Image 1 (cartoon, rainbow, N blue to C red):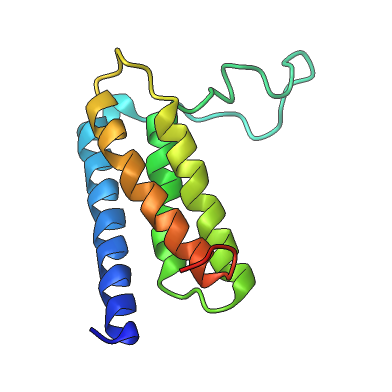
Image 2: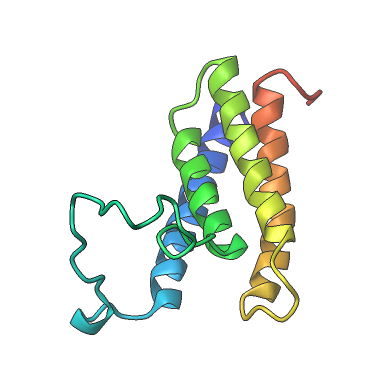
Length: 136
């Protein structure tokens, strides 16, 4: 196989992975109903409410954040050309992999997280190879 064709296949695979992760994330969160929407928030903060309280900025779950990061990496892969761009892609895949490693064993998506780790690692290595940071 020629190198351009291999790259095309990898990009297609990454795009499909990102799309499936996105769809999975939508299905995992369940249907959105009017009861699930956030109440309207006053645009000007009141002086007695602290900024950045834990209720306002909940810590994202590792699995959810990993899927978001992987989706972003897959999208960037489609247009990456320069060393810097490929390096950014590699860092995002590495971040997604590290987040999947943080998913606790009792989490309902643990098995999926464990399944994604080697894929994300391979994608990271591919990006870093394209950036010239790893030997092919």
